[in-house]
Image (cartoon, rainbow, N blue to C red; front, top):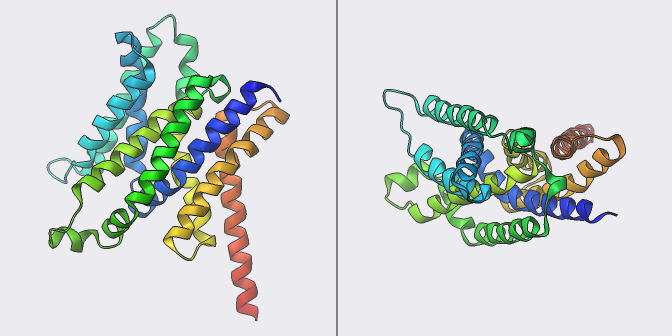
Length: 267
């Protein structure tokens, strides 16, 4: 197998595995819209990085983290929080697209920023994704109890003053980091799919939160080789093929869980 396919498989697989546990909390907390808006702002960050002459990944990372922290603090004032988050995210996407379209040197890469270019990962990209994925997985283990407590009993914890502000900030930073690296793999429009589809696929087959997180990581990792195999055999875009592979696993898990429930009911 060519080296670029190995790099694509490893990079997307590591990213999918890291996105699994974080995606469970995104799903449980109903934060998919926030994640999507952060991803849209990531495109603006890439454009700003190119304008300033720095690595696009640096621009994506900084702006995604800033956007995550600001949008998470949006309250239901004059403008509802969901509306504010949506406006900020889509304005960022529009500005990023306009800035990138105005750069002659990167105009041909617009689809890559929107839908990813996983087959173009370099060894440096792969090492960065590997380091970020390991850091995310370790942080998920370290903050697991605090995140779970905030998810299950968030209102009670806030009322009693037992919220862990540092853990909440760490969660948002990790979501932003996954978005930043995911921009290279599946693009700004599809990265949220890697955060929500594997956990959704794991939910019908899991009995505990920990089991769901582990299974989501496995499904996220499996989506990469399956999607790349389909892209190789059918000449499909690699990033969207990885997302579709995750969607197929979601359908199979849902049907499998439904069939098992029907069999148990008949017994």
